[in-house]
Image (cartoon, one colour):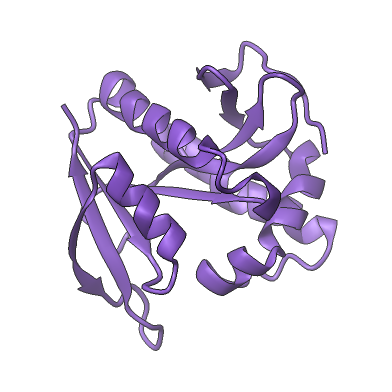
Length: 178
């Protein structure tokens, strides 16, 4: 699923990827991502059963965060062919003291180093462009690939925390940026 190519609105470029803000036109990709088995298992059901649900997710999540915080989850696409592969970016949750990094990829793009490349570039942007000195990550204890990626990035385990009443605890990791 190709997307609009890198433009001046592109926030981050790496050797193989670009990261840019999500737009309503990205709804087909977001619909596929939010309904992928790994997303549903490890992140949760966002209720985006149709394209309008994906558009609502983009408007009420990432786009609202861009307006409020100046950052959010960004579309990650390959530079070579403008193939949308996932999302990566920063979130500010009311339940956490610090900004956290979030990421998710379609299964066919996992295990190729894209997650590490996008997350490392996001952390560099967070420190350089926003002066953020500490970033958290929350992850389901069963999400071993994400836990491994966090370790490779230099995150350290801080403990378990319940973010919402009635929900299972998540693991919290942190990294100091310099």
